[in-house]
Length: 491
Ligand code: ADP
Image 1: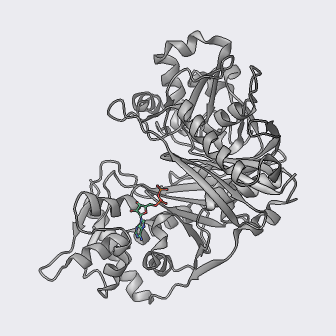
Image 2: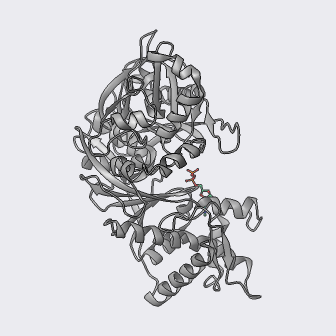
Image 3: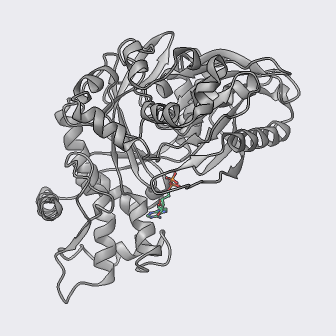
């Protein structure tokens, strides 16, 4: 038995297989795009069969490149969260399209439950909000509108994407697969009690989710099952949703440790310890990991528009040619010249929570140039992160430093500006694929290569630290200007 760790990193737009050695070195990866289906306004679907076929093809390639199944100690899986798959336990084939996390088809159901006053109790139980984002409302919609799911009766299986992949990896020659989900993914469904870690019957009733169709909730690390699809036995030993895996991959193992992933949007998670947190500022409470049946929790908040602002400036406005050139443009001026860009292109998130807010560019004069506007766009990342920090602190989760990753923070100017405006040291790991790394750590732990998560976190490697350097006056002036700019867009 080898000691390599193979990760299946199943994302929204692509799926990948990556191989690590126990020191954290990435030995290679293979990726394939996933087809996005948009059958109507607000509807986003994936073909679960395609997710499986492309994930298994990438995995097969990486097993072969690693020297065969014997070289692999364990598989870890991390996945796009909240997306739901429906399949037939007898045939192992999907019964319906997978409903993707971005899909808004259950908005009316959420509205009616909110109007019925259900949200506070749901939030207290699950840590989540009544939003189409979460799996439970998607399951309720599907059970009502897709008769084949009801007709399948006891053959119906429901699960998030890691659950689907584990079933397919472990099903063999007509034998049913293993039907499990890990506690991080289960905590995104609206069906699991955050404190109990089990499916809650009244929540299952509220969202018409048949208990016998749901997977068993398990830890994030352990020997869950074995796949024989790659020419030998490989155990599946690590499971976690993508943001939780990234938080683990950033070694946020102590209470208060915080990571921010700055991709298309930005996701911030703070380790909240072993007592279920409860947010008064509309942040989410979620499971960060479960090991030996014991849960560690996180508070989670997101900025809706991060890298997508840069894409918008490039593709819709034509102000820039490429995302990386924003760094030199921002450095070409000493400041934004009083310009603020509030990127409320799809409403404003924490702590404002104004879905109807619209973006605004303000503070311009004849002296304003393209560089000032681009700089204002980049500055908006630190400003929005500061707003999130305020909400987290009000919920008792103040940040001492911030660990960053994602496509945007390859931009050194943004990383430094985050440190300056948050007035915190900001750490950026040399190896940016923290999501896959977190799943590799869990697989290493579950297979016995490591005995503790602390030991596994040695896979993380070196970081660059950006120290805060902006004077308090300048910082206060920027934050005051941002606050005024935000107030102008609040309706
Ligand atoms: P996702 O995982 O959400 O697809 P990534 O982590 O790959 O996103 O990050 C891609 C995003 O980062 C894009 O929206 C892009 O505009 C932005 N981005 C990439 N490079 C830079 C850069 N050098 N400066 C600013 N933004 C960047």
